[in-house]
Length: 340
Ligand SMILES: Cc1ncc(COP(=O)(O)O)c(C=O)c1O
Image (tube, rainbow, N blue to C red; front, side, top):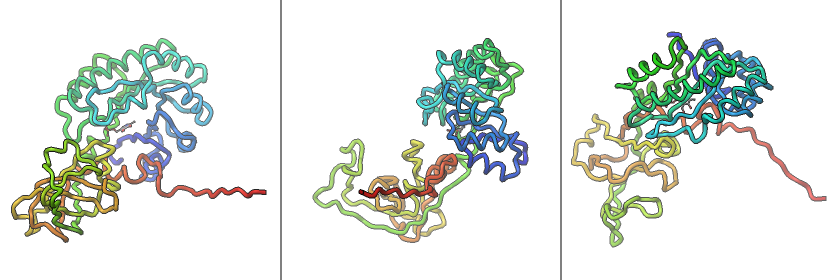
């Protein structure tokens, strides 16, 4: 905030969190193409200037609840190898653009530009994915201009890999110069900033040696271990740690991540031979299994620590009020009926 950055928010809670940092609403963008009534009301009340849309319904909602909003048309432009695709949910297809531009005009809503998100973790040939998306956005900008909208902003979303852009930045810059000269460019990097900022440390609070006895089966014979059909190593070293899939390791389910731990080097017990180890999270759910057969020092036990690198985006945020949608402090309504 002190460097003058602007903030992409997904909800009322995120808008208010940014305002609480002292950032003026003029530096926010509500970049959720399908907003709940409370998000629309907060955008209007707080004076957020800009939001995204990709449907006629959203335009009508904005016209009713937030008539002063300026808009960005979110278009679909997927990176084929994205780790978390978003195009299945968001982004208007090319054949919808003209009708959306016309409806915005009819409702008196100015469309100031185009937005896309290629998918989180753009993956292989990310540069090509952004070049393609910028070309798609340029086509959408033409449709908007033809309908009388003054396109002055391009929002290239997120999707950048954690920490290092490599060849992506020059490719994006060249495509922007060619297709969007003089247009203000906005980016919404999430994973890029946050993925590598955190190493998670989990305490080991349980350990055991499990023998599969006569049921032992060859690890490699089971292609995809499941809770019902787990890998049983003849003797398996097992550790229980203080975080799991209902906490930070929800990234295994929602972010398609495969976090791998190592022993904290300062632990004397971390120096022994490596043995295949299964690591469990703390809940009572068998699904709460973090790695199987992972080489860890044989001497680890209760009181040891396992550390997990690159546990910034998207880990603990997904286990809480992700994107500001509170899943814990929900209001409760008790309803009953009385038979006459
Ligand atoms: C609208 C929007 N902007 C930005 C982001 C951040 O994306 P990333 O972490 O891939 O950079 C997301 C993530 O889903 C998003 O939906």
